[in-house]
Amino acid sequence: MELFNRLIRAIEHAEKENELPDFLGAALRHVAENPLQFSDRQLVARLAEQVSEYDPYCGCGCFGAGCSANDLLATLKELGVEKLSSP
Image (cartoon, rainbow, N blue to C red):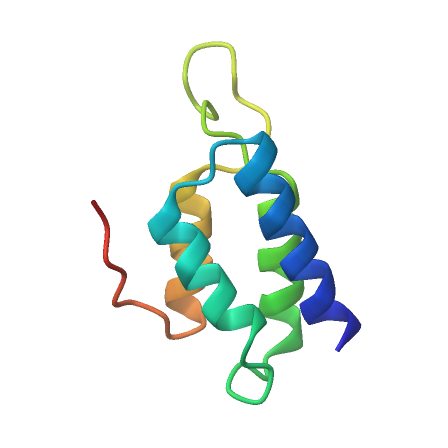
């Protein structure tokens, strides 16, 4: 459960500090709140790391470090979370 708690903390931080879009926050919370459904711990750990490194400006000009929304979406897709309601 610590892994899923780490994911929740990372989501909260990204929402407050890094402008994490609401639709991504909702999808990420779905994973964090359903540990029995998302049993692939390696993917969940990768997702937690990516959320911790989330940067809304990743890939824009000189802002190459960090993880982008597309990185998060790709990992969510690997976990089977594909139906996201985006703005």
